[in-house]
Structure formats: structure tokens, C-alpha cells
Image 1 (cartoon, rainbow over the protein chains, first blue to last red):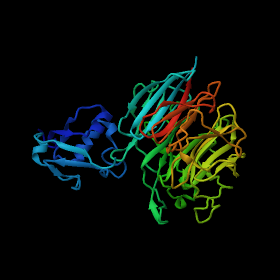
Image 2 (image 1 turned 90 degrees about the vertical axis):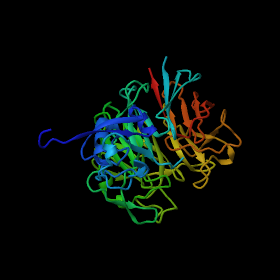
Image 3 (image 1 turned 120 degrees about the vertical axis):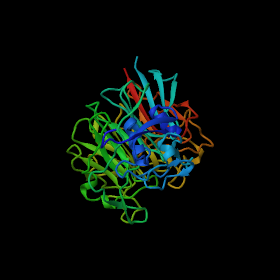
Image 4 (image 1 turned 180 degrees about the vertical axis):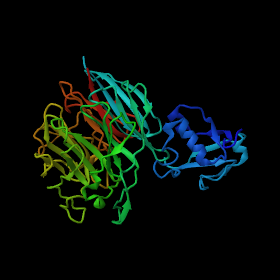
Length: 107
Length: 371
């Protein structure tokens, strides 16, 4: 790797059923994300690959996570963490998935 | 022989109902977008196989879907609805200022002349336009910017722009309606707007005859007489004969003048349909009877259409976009209920049959008459 190149990680992202159906994909999506791997960079990569997911996990304009969408990694809730906080190395290494969930709410 | 395609949006997906010109035997396809709320679907008058659908959920917000093959296949298009500039505030339920926040698309109205152009009425109330088949959207900001925006307030269902009507005789003229702000008209293709609420009287607001603040539920127009408008207000059925400059009440002998839907016969501009609902607190038909009321005199004199409709133990509602008419020689009328039934009349309302009885709660019904 030459100076200035970013390391690229291949991570695994698990999508909820309603978003899988929207973009016609399997439950788990492999994504190439530049290091350091964060929620923001992971969502950027996800939306670049599936533009129809734009606005469905985080709002257009503000970029905030939608209230009923939650983000988990390594059995911990990352929903309220900074989107720029580095995710655990096991997520960056693809050993554990980044899980996007629809909250249990509504009817 | 002509055929009809009925587009049904429900709280848990979309359905498309097909029949030939007899409108007797129906095929049902769907659910499309299962599990999502489909507030509205509508086809382009220029290219009827192009259909737009508003798909939304509390979890994942707004998606707009487009079909270019009559609803057989669909693909998501643009869903970026960003208000122009600093959105500002409107009134909240308690009268305090509340920032404009996009929530969903209530109504999609394709252009009468350009299959690539489509308008979206959204909550919090604003009007957007796409000129590239729904891929990108731009707000027609003159509506919110004309001055009364800070005084608009949400109705019980949210502050939604739910009605968009093109004037087929004047490409620059368009009508929209907002709960609870009222009706507005543009005469310059959406650059500037004026409230058209004179004659409305709403006892539930501080000034019952205010310029804005009226909870207009729906407006309908006959395409050959675009200056005549019919309105179902929260309470009161209203009529204007001068493009909304002045309204007068035509509730007449209706059992209750609360309701949501209103529509006009496709060939008889003085024949109007409403479905009276008991009250604002009891959103179901009165007396357990589902009755469509038809006026052949442009209002005031109404007759109950009951043949084929349940006349006991029925407590459904019909939402504001839940009625449509086809343009077959004998006008077909269609409506969907909160109980999941879609009823059709192939004889202008004289008799009704249920096309389907057990869909999710119906949010909208549109119909296309196809060659």
C-alpha cells in the first residue's frame, strides 16, 4: 500500500426484512468500507451500493438516524453512539456483522 | 373493449384490480410493497402504464415507487424531499411555533401533458414537483412562502397537503388543499399562490371565517368545467362557481355533512358523490349503514345510494383519497373503506358490489380507464 492509500475492510451488514425487500437483496450484505470503520462510513457504503436505501435508515438532510431504526454490533446497541466512533475490530474484520434493525414498535 | 385498472393503497401494501368494460369480473394482484403504508397511487394520463406510488412507514420513512408497465414491476425512484431554504415554523396543536418537518407523501398527481412530470403533496404541508419521472424533487416554495404559512396547523391526521388538481383548460392553474390550512390556487404554474377560502365557516377555529386555518378534507372538479369546485370540509359540503374565489354550502339534506371523500361524475358535471361520516369524534358511517349520497343538482338535494351496500352493523370510514370515477360510457364509481372493502358501481352509483372485502384498511383508490 502506498502512502495516502486507505485500508479497505470488508464488513457484513445485516438488513431488516423490509429493507431487504425494498432493494431485493439477501439478509446479509458484504460491503467494502475504508478504515477506520464507523457507522457513518458503513452507511455511506451501503447507500452507495443501494441508493434506494437513502433516507430509510437515516434522514435525508439532517443525516440523523431515523427514530425507529436501530444499529447493533457485538450484541451492543450502537444507536446512540456517535456515527463517527470506530466500530469494534471484529466488525471491521468481518467476523461479526453490523446489524440494522427496525425497532419493535407500531402495529 | 375498454378496461379498467383500479389502484388501491392500503395500510399494509398496494393492490391492483383489473376488469374489462363490464366491470363484473375482477382480477386482484398484490400485495405490492407488503407491510408498508401506501398513501396513494396514480397513473399518468399521458402514459397510463406509468404509475407512481407513495410508500412509507414509521420505521423507514418515505419511498416513491414507479412502474412503467402498468404495475407489473416497480422500482424505487427519488425520495429526497428537502424544503427550500430554511423551512421556518407553522403552528403546533397547542398554538406554539413548530418547525416544518417532512413526514410523508400523501398524494401524487402526474402532469396532464408530460409523463415525466409529477407533483407530490406532502406532510408537513408543501408541494414538490419532479420533471424526471420522480427521480429528483424540488419544492414549489411559493406556496409556503406566500405569508400565511406560520399560521397553518395540523389536523388530527397531521398537516398534510392531500389534494392537487390540475386545470385542464389552463396549464398555469392548479388547486391544492391542506388540512388544516385550507384551499389555495396558483395562476402562474406554482410560482405564487393565494388562499381561496372565502365563504368557508369553521366553528372550531378562533375566527370561523379566517383566511386560513380551515380543515379542508378534499376537493373535486369536473375536467370540462374547471371553474366549478366541490369541497368536503371537516364539516360542510361546499361549492364554488368561480375557481374558489367564493364558496357556498350545498350540504342540503345530507344526514351529516362531516366526511372525507367527494367526487364528480365523469360525464355529468352536476352529479356529485359524498359518503357522510357521523362526526369528527366518531369516524364511521351513521346508523350502521354504508350509504353513498349522490346529488344530480350540484349539491343541496342528495339521495342515498344503498343497493349492494351493508345497511346494518357497518362502522367503516372512507378516507379522503378513497373514491374515484372511471370514464366509461356509463360512469363507474369506486371507493375503499377502512374495513378493507373496495366497492364498485358500474351504473353511476345506482348499485354496488364489493370487488374485494378483506384487504387491509384502504387509504386510497384511483381508477384508470384503458383502451
